[in-house]
Image (cartoon, rainbow over all chains, first blue to last red; front, side, top):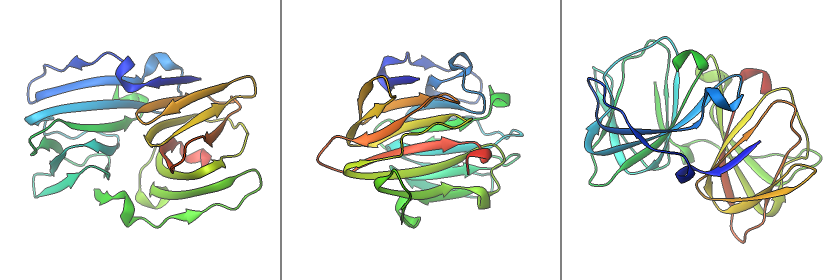
Length: 114
Length: 114
C-alpha cells in the first residue's frame, strides 16, 4: 500500500532527442510491486513537447493542469485540464504544451513500456 | 485515438451492497481497444464510501478533488487532492469521503478487474 502526495516524488528532467522541456515523476514504477501497469506524472514547460513517436503499447493519459495539443502526424487535437486521452499501440503521437503555464498530465503504461 | 473531456462520458450510480454514494465514469474501458488496463473516474458523495474488500489485482489511484481516507482494516490513512495510491493485489481497502464536497479520483485496473 502506498499513499503519497505527488510532490513527494522527485522530478527528473528528461534529456533525450526529440523532447523539449519535459520532466517526469515515477509515481508508481517497477520498484512498487505493481504487476500490470505504472503511473507517471509528466510536466511540460510552455512551448515544450514530448517526442513524435509510436510504440507497441498504449498510453492512457489524464490532463491535470494546463492545455496543449496532441499531434498525430495527420492532425493536431487540442486538449486541456480534465481531458483524457487514449493512444492505442502503434499510433504516432506527440504531446505539446500550447499554453502559458506548465502542462501536467498522468500517463499510464504497461511494464513493457519502461 | 480518443481525446475527450471526462464530462462527455455518462456518470452511472453504483448500487451494490457495501457502497454508499458512489458513481463511476468508464473513461477508457473494454470497448476502447486498450489491451492492458482501463481508466475509470469515481465520484463519492460526502459521507460515501466504496466497499471494504480485496481482489487479486492492483488499483492505482490519483485524487483529483476532495479529501478522504483509505481504510485498510488496520488503519485509516488520510489523503486529499494530488495524492496517489497503490493498492497491491490482495490488500483490503475502502475509500471513504471525509470532506464536505465530492471526492473525485481516477482508478486504473487491468482487464481482469472488469
